[in-house]
Every structure is written in C-alpha cells, then in structure tokens.
Amino acid sequence: MDNNEDKLNDYQEQYDILVEEEKEKERKKFFWILLFCLIIVLLSVFLATYSYYRVYTGGTYELNVDTNGDGKADLNVDMNNDGFCDINCDTNNDKKPDTNLDYNGDLKPHFGLDTNGDGKPNDNLVNQDTNKDGICDLNCDTNNDGWPDTNLDMDGDGKPDLNIDTNNDGEPDLNLDTDNNGKPDLNVDTNGDRKCDVNCDTNNDKKPDTDLDYGDDLKPHFNLDKNHDGEPDDNLLNQDKDNDGKCDLNCDTNNDGRPDTNLDLDGDGIPDVNIDTDHDGKPDLNLDTDKDGQPDLNIDTNNDGEPDLNVDTNGDGICDVNCNGNKFPTSDGPIIQVEADEGILYVNYIKGVDIEKMDVGASTTQTFTVENKSNFVLYFNVDWIDVKNELTVREGLTYQVKRDGVNVTDELPTPDKDGRMLSRIMIAPNTMYTYDITYTFHNLSDIDQTMDQNKLFSAKIQAEAIQ
Picture 1 (spheres, one colour):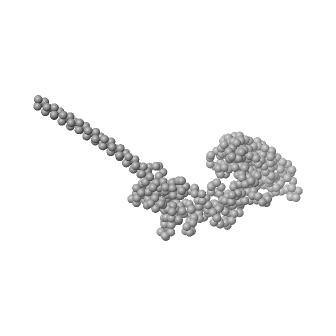
Picture 2 (cartoon, one colour):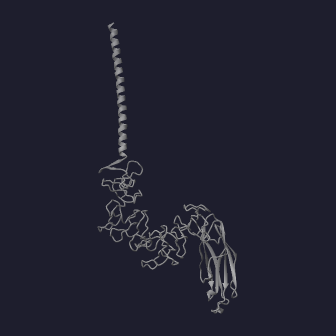
Picture 3 (cartoon, helix red, strand yellow):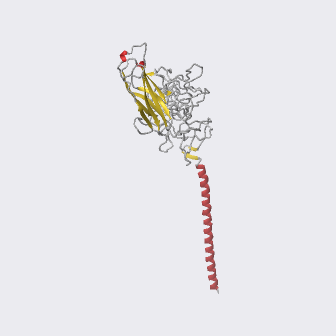
C-alpha cells in the first residue's frame, strides 16, 4: 500500500515538473514575442527619425529644409528618399551648404563635390584661389551664403563658364546668366578672348545694346556693331522707316532691350517673323512661337500680307485652319540640291533662252518651276551662277521676275557676277510655283550702246532648298 502511494507521489512530482516546464516555455515564448514587438516599435521610431536626420561627427542635421520659404527644399536635400543628403548638404549645422552644391535650384551637384562620401568637399571647390594671390579666381562666394556667385565653373574643368568677374570687383561682367538657366545671355564671349561678342551691354544697365542674338542662338542679328566702336550701326532696333512716329522694324515693345515684333533676322530691311500688321504691339503674321527663326503660326506663304498656313483664327496660339504641323524636316544644312531629280523640292527648267543676239527693244522670257512635293513648308533661294557679262552698259539689258504672273522683283540690270536673285522663298506643302524671267534690251537714248554689239551675257539659274 505504501509502495503504491510512493509511486503515485513520484508520478505527481513528474507531472508537476512537466507542467512547470511547459509554463516556463510559455513564459519564454511570451517574453520573446514581447521583445520582438518592442524591437519593431523601437525600429519604427528609429527609422522615422533617421529618415529626417542623419548623424555626422559634428552632430545631426535636418533633411529637406526650405530656407527661402518658396515651398521647395534647398538645403540638405534628399533626392531619393533614402535618408541621406544628396544636394546642398550642410555638414556643420551653420545653415549653409558645404558639399554637392547646386546652381540656382537646379538640384544638380556642381560645386564642392563630395566624391568619396566622407562628408567633405574634394572636387570643384568653392572660393578657389588658383594663382595664390589671395584673390578668389573660381566659384567665388561673394555674399557669404555658401553658394558661389562669380567665376562659376559649371563643368569642373577648372575654367570659369558663367558670371565671370574680369576686373576682380566682385561683380560679374562677362558671360552673365541673367535668367539663371545655366547658359550665358549677356556680354557673351563666344570665342574665348574674354571680350563680349554677343548681347553686349555697353552702358551697364543689364540690357544688351549691341550685337543682339535671337532665341539664344548666340549669333548677332540686331544692333550690329560692325566697326567695334561700341555703338550699333546696322539692323537697328526700333526703326521708324516711314517716319510716321511708329516702329516698323525690330520693335522692342516691352523695353527689355530686345526686339519683339517685326523682326528682321537677315538684315535686309524686311521683317521676317513676328510681324505686327495692325500696329497694336502684338505679332499676328509669321509668328515664330519656338524662336528657331522660322514662322510656324499664321504663315504667309505668298507674301500677300494674309496668313494662309497654320492659321490661328481665335488668337489662342493654336492652329485652327490649314494646319500643317511640322514646318521643317529635322536635318542640318541644305536639305537637297534641287537640280538633282530626287528628294522633296523639284525644279523643272521648262524654257531656256539664248540672248546672245538681241535687237534693241527686244525681250525674251525664261521659265522654270519649283515644286514642293513634301508635307512640310520649305524655303529656297534662287541664285545666279556661272555669270558672264561682257556688256559695257549693264543698264541696257535688264531682267524682271514674275511668280505665277505677279512681279516679285523690279526691272533690274543683269548681274555681272554670281549672286542671289531671290532670297528665302517660302513654299507650302504640295505646291508648285512658276517663275518667268523676262530679259529686255533697252534703247538708251542718252547713251551710246554701239560698244555692246555682239557682246555676250550668259548665266545659269540654280534653286536650292535651305533651312
């Protein structure tokens, strides 16, 4: 009996031990679950904090700071949301960028580059004194805000590209970027001689005065200073050609120093783009909306003063009638030599003339056609080539050009050398022009023309597509 009780007690003890072991397992399981949850909570808090702060030796700094209140981050900018500063990094908490500085908010690293990730700038540094004379030569921060202001080296080649200070007065005077797009637009030096070539401001009013470009092409078109005396002498702004008190050519309507309407791009005295036909200060014919030098809206293809291609009828800047879309194939240089019977512009010399033997008072006509078989607006020139003119009195033999029966030139003396007959003629898609050149041998009563008997005039005519 006692023996059975002892066995029963042994079983009870073993059972109690097993129960206690199971309870211990449950307690440990609960502990690890609790610990895991606590770790998750702590990690979440840490990550949330770390996404907004990054630790350096000097302390912590706030990410994506808007220092000027424009609603955009400009200091300690985290571009990829990885919790690390990428642009304009302030490593010493002085509220100024120290590494990977951008230019005018473009959020691209240009200056003070940290190429090895140690938090220190090591390439294209700010405030470089390259010749050790105690004066800043490259990426100069003149107002002590951390960003460079003059002699900006945009590509890291050790040479200033923008806002160059040539006289060390702290103010830029060459290759100024007035619109902060990373390209020079005032006092531009195009050949590297540290002298202004395009958009030259001669009176320091921050407006171009001579050799103005068009559409940022950095080529002089207006107010040309041909004798380099600092004064414009050709294709001037605000020309009043008929002396009626109103601007007719290269009109600056907003007083910014650049022409806005009736632009003469080639200096021939005739407006080419953005023509203001009603003198209201706004262009309404041959509008060049993308400033590439070619009209693309309200195009007048036949020079009658009325738009007939890509016509905007309601003034919203969008074509409504006879819309052609693209105005030019995207290729460089001449599109095709039109004498070749292929491509998109075709010339057919229908009727030639032999004017070697003409009687006084006689006339003869030469005819050719130019056809645009493409779906684009094209332009072309017509040139005299291989000219030979033995006449002593050139005024005796004249020519006049008609297109589709309408005069396009005055009656002019025949040329004595190669040159341009018709310049920059626009031809609409799937259109053909017929040209007649009439030659007349005049009897000049006050001039002896006997010396021109049996003299020769010969020439070839070439039409060529252009951009």
